[in-house]
Length: 190
Image 1 (cartoon, rainbow, N blue to C red):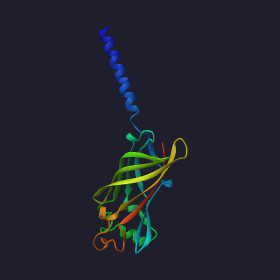
Image 2 (cartoon, rainbow, N blue to C red):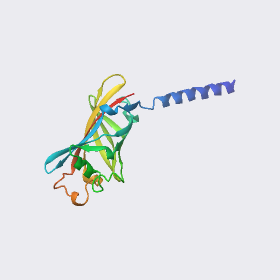
Image 3 (cartoon, rainbow, N blue to C red):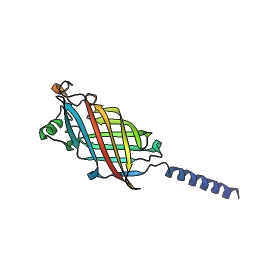
């Protein structure tokens, strides 16, 4: 009888433990590429220069009710950069800027989220561009579309010098300012 009781105890503990593990994973979201974008605005000679990264992927595990177990990893294809002027896009791929041949990907990873208002959140993570990684905080708003589809819109600002973007004659912030604004729209479904 004691053996049976021990087996029941082990069974109950196993069921409870495995049940708690099933709640420990945030829902996985898939990016909808044709409804998503990552854009940037820099300033050259006091005029805005805008561009976009056309290709990126992501592992998004996010639950607004369980922020402590949420995590995001976005990988941007640097070679997919587009600007209104093809010459600028070509220059951005060069060794002085993104050095896309050596560093074809940029990554943003976050495991720390906080709610800062109605449907407004903050993500604290790290951004890696070239061979430099730095802490980055971004803010975003969730706009639920259906029970299984949502849109996150947000922004952050970075200093290009932190990542070694713009070297040699471009290292000075006289002509191309240091601050770059990044905006994103991520439509996702689960």
